[in-house]
Amino acid sequence: MGNILECHNVTKRYGGKTALDNLSVVVKSGRITGLLGPNGSGKTTLIKIISGILCANAGEVFADGHKIGTESKKIVSYLPERPYFSPGMKVSETIQFFKDFYEDFSEDVAVNMLRTLDIRPEAKIRTLSKGNREKVQLILVMSRKAKLYLLDEPMGGVDPAARDFILKTILTSYNENAGIIISTHLISDVEKVLDDVIFLKNGTVVLHKSVDVIRSEEQKSIDALFREVFAC
Image 1 (tube, helix red, strand yellow):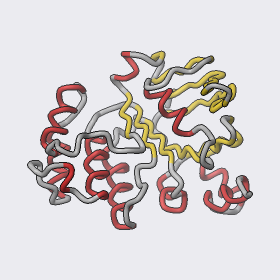
Image 2: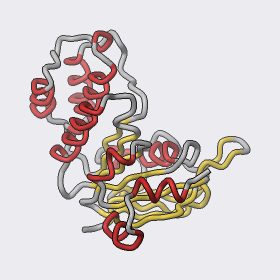
Image 3: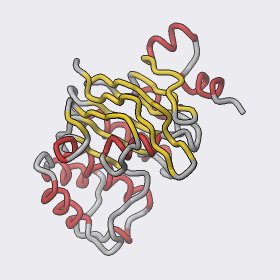
């Protein structure tokens, strides 16, 4: 598999605060990577730079060989940490929104997943539970045939049953040749689907290894290693 993501010496500052500090990392295609770190470590900033929402102050980022810009946005599917659809929109209108914007979006896939969850397309976003709102947004993101999926806290604030559905959706929906980056604090819930992990601390990479290697070398779970590395 080739490289789906390359970050070279990426730095991002907000005023006098450095969110990413000369960060370099390479992610392979066909892998699910956990982007893990405490609050303020730079996870969301990095994801927003890869998605093209933010610009780095220095360094370069490539998605499947494309420098971040118009071409990279065609192949990157991004799930933000917070819902962004208007509460007055119908679920069917969000589907039309994605269909209009993305050539790789499959309306059939989205509708089938909604049907499985018994979410009515004519329902308005404001009438849905928090869990169902997050499920709708995930369904839209995963209904694209993208090459790189960026999922920022996809399971935040939902119950354990909903987390199981979200993980199943992630595993069954993406192209096996694509890459997925999941940023989350719920490490114990998500580590069973991860191939690799990246630990971020103060905007730098402190660990980037395969899950199998970590379990073999450290004889502990990713969650246990995370607690050890980032112990207060």
